[in-house]
Image (cartoon, rainbow, N blue to C red; front, side, top):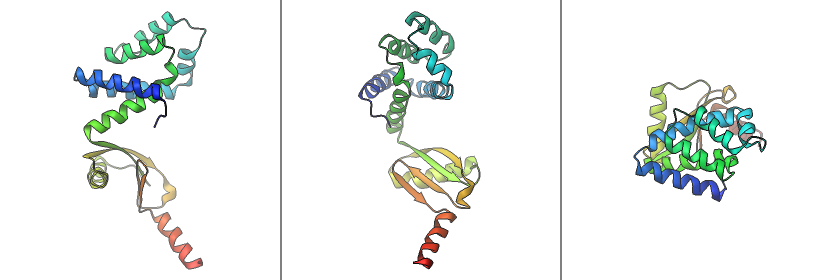
Length: 178
């Protein structure tokens, strides 16, 4: 979650515009792809934040690289270039996702398991835990962690539901040792 007031303001504006044009889901999909590109490739971030590259050249690159993105997303990036706020891209995307999820009744969840979950298992986890946090569904990020031995750990915001075998064994060990 971002602490940037600027990122929140841009995200709110972007969300309101996407809602007005009935393109929230499409914009969200484009922003997810942008986040992968922006955070996954250090060279891209360095290129776009470099003072050596002119603003016009940065805009031209944005139009070329993100040609298939919604105009709302491209225009937002162009405004960020003009305002020299490209460093805020990740935070703006995160804030937009929070607004979008809130509007749809979705919560982000990290689910730690010893193996990848099937779609049916994801749906079961989503329906079971969404009720606990007062949401309609969960957007699940499955993290495979063999160290938990068995069971699963679900983290939704600052809530953690831990039914892993490793935690139970640790608890048993503490009780036996004292």
